[in-house]
Image (cartoon, rainbow, N blue to C red; front, side, top):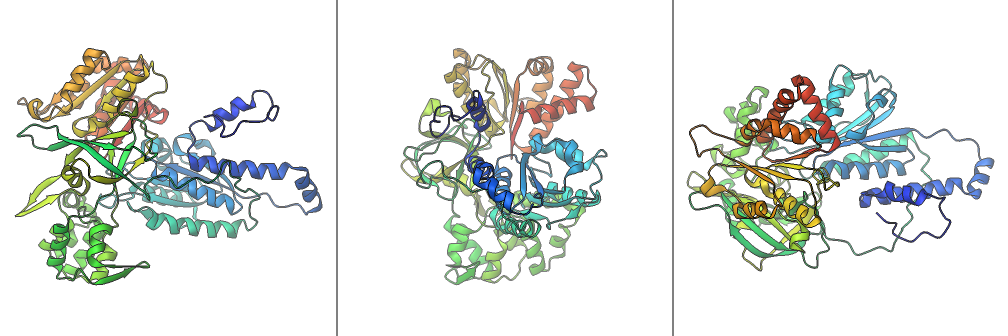
Length: 598
C-alpha cells in the first residue's frame, strides 16, 4: 500500500521506500497504528538528545521480551491479540506479535513469556492457521518449558459442547511441559469482550509488575482524526433492495437471496468477507419466556452498570434462539432435573450437542420447570451477538451493494413455531426496510493474488455463497486461471441455488467446470466428497499445478471433504495417508487450502 503522505526527497536511502511499501502492504489499521508507535520509539531512542540522556543515566536492564501468538479463523482472535500486544508494549515489555502459522516453532524452547490467543472451531478443532502450532505443542516433539511463564485466552462458542477446547488443551499442555501460569486461562464466548477486556487488563497489570519502566514509544498520528467509521459497534442501516426465494416449492429448506444497499456507509469488502447483521428477538418469543417463568417484563433489572426493563433485556440484549451449555447447567440446578444434569457428563457430549443444536432456551424452560428471578435470568443468558453471513457478491459486479444467501431457519417445536434470529429478520424484511450491518473481514479466505492460479471451490447448500462472489470477481479482474465449482444439495429440481447464473458463467467462460451432487435424487446418497473422489485424478492434477482450494459450509461436511482430499492425495500422489495429511496441512498454512465453516 502507498504511504499515507509523500516522502520528502532523500529522506530514505535508495530502495528503502520500496521496502517500506512491502512491509506495510496488507496491514490493517490496528497494526499500522502499532507500527507508527514503534517507529516513534525508535526515532526517540536514536536521536542525539536521547543519546546524551542515555550517557548521563545509569545503564538500564534489558526489557523482558514477550511473545503473543494468535490462531484465528475469522479474525476475532487476531484483533484481540493485536490490541493485547499494543497494550503490553506500552507497559514496557519488548513485544513480538505472530500468527500461529508464522511462528518459528524452534524458538519455543527459548521463550520466557508467552501469551496465546486462540479460537476453537466446530467440534473442538483449532483454526486452520494454527493447526501445525497446536499439533506441535500437543505432540511428542514439544520441548520442555521449565523457564516459561504463559497465559492462554481461548475464544469459542458455548453452544458447542467443546467450548474453548483448544485453549483448554494448550493451557494444560504448557503446564505439563513445565511452564508456569502467568495468567489464569480465559474462556471468551461469542460476546468476546465480556472476558477478553478484563483478561487484557489483568495481563497489563501483570506486565507492569514485570517491567515497571514504561516504553519510550509513543503513537504519532499520521493523519487527522476522522469520524468513527461504521463497524460492529456502530452498524450501518442498510436498506433492503430485494429479497427472493431461490429454492422451489417443496424444498426442505427455504433459502433467500437478499440484496442490501451499502451506499453512503463507507463500508468496503472483498470476496470471502462476511456481513454481520444485528437483529432483535421477536416480541412473541419474549412474551413466551416471560409467561413460562411468570416474570414481569416491566421489572427493571440492574446488570453490570445498566438498568433496563426485563422486556428490553430479553428483546435486544440477550440470546433467546441459541442454547448454551452454561445455561443448561444453570437450569439443571434450578429445575433439579436429574436427566438434564446427566447430559452435562463428559460421556454424554453427543446427547448434549443434539440438545444445544435443536432446542431453544424457551423450550428447555418449558420441558424442565424451574424458578428464575429476573436478575438471575439476565445474568445467565448470553449477550445477543450479531449473525455473520458470507457475502455472495463482488463489489466489482454490484457496486455499493452486498448480497447474501440466507437459509431461513423455521420449524415447529410441538405446537410452537420457532425461527432463527437474523434469518427470520432477513426473510421478513421488505424492500426499503433498514437492517443494521457491518463488514467482518476474513483474511484467511481470499482469492489468490496471482490471477493465473486455478481455483477449486467446494460449497454445498448456502456454502456456495462466497463462490458466487469469487466467480464474479475473477470475471471482472480478467483472471486467467480456471474456476471449478462443486455444489451439493438434496434435489436438483428444488435446491439448485443460482442454477441459471452458473450456467451463464459456464457459457461466458467465467466458470470452467461445474460438478454437482444431489444427495437424494437417487437410491444411494451422493455428497460433494463422493464427487471429489470420483474426479480424484483431476483434483490432484489441479492441486499439483498450484490450484487454490476453498471449502465453505457445515463443519461435518468440511471434515468429510478433508478426508476425501487426504485419500485423493495419497492415491494419486503416491503418498502415505500420513504424508498426504501433512501435505494438506502445509497447503492450509500456506493459504492455498482455506475453509470457512460453521
